[in-house]
Length: 403
Ligand SMILES: *Cc1c(COP(=O)(O)O)cnc(C)c1O
Ligand SMILES: [Zn+2]
Image 1 (cartoon, protein in one colour):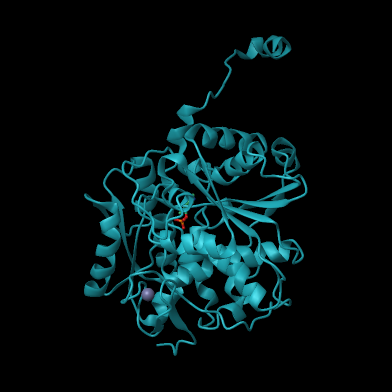
Image 2: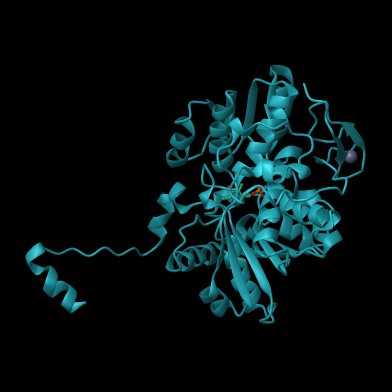
């Protein structure tokens, strides 16, 4: 077992915990914990960009033992210049950080890779998560890679299309009937009783893994920090991790400012954005969430209050978009070569809305994170007008001439 080279600190009340114990939430105030960064870290320039993520950024993961056998090629995703999108929205420059190209096709892999390392170093043989799709696939895959048994809890109205791509990894997959928000608390106590380390949306080392997206963006932009980073947000872990990545790089002296973080949510489940708009300190549970974007549909996000604190402290923005706007953004991204799922398109949809609301000046550089691929959710394509022509071989020439 490791001698953990870090502590865990409560994001709510600042209480400190010994990292050799598996803790995720504060015993005093119930808020989510995080790993404090001591401000010392450099990038190992000799490691090629595209080597292993945890080697390149190892000084920012001082608590992890070297273990390249766990690498699945997570991270090092492209940052794409999108001039036509900039023109369409009136932004100075738009770049897309395309997380669809991770090993299980979503950013969740960055966090799962880190969470699995945490579980292994704590001595666990079983890991778990609860998820509506992407995190389940990611944890099942990374657990297999590490030789651990995965326990995956999903809610009982998950559609078949999403179930089988989890089941194919052969985890212990359980559909649970009942309140999804209560399942979060239940999973932590079940984990304690049955020796399963749950790497849920806000597990502190999952958040640590998410920081690598920001590390890469800084490097890809030659350490010129973008003005805005727009993140499709549900449970809030990804948003926190990306922000922490910039903050830790700033502490280490590698960058001189942090971007304005934009929390992009669906109007039908804008739990965090609504609370921020009302000036609340605590999120209020969304009654009857309703959006096509199930990957960003958390009615009671575990990191909701923590994200509210981040938005306030660092001057973030919130933008909520309708299902129609998500579908429109999905189409637009396809027209530019990228097929992402509706929840993932929330970042670009939010930028378009910022343009419509006069929030853009035309000189800003914006990074939109697209979180996962469209191929995982093809049933939604019935909402688009998709065209396929028919003709006979003998008539093909005339048909094309007549188009
Ligand atoms: C998980 C997920 C999100 C939201 O991330 P959180 O950490 O829950 O806020 C956004 N988009 C996709 C595609 C996801 O799978
Ligand atoms: Zn606390």
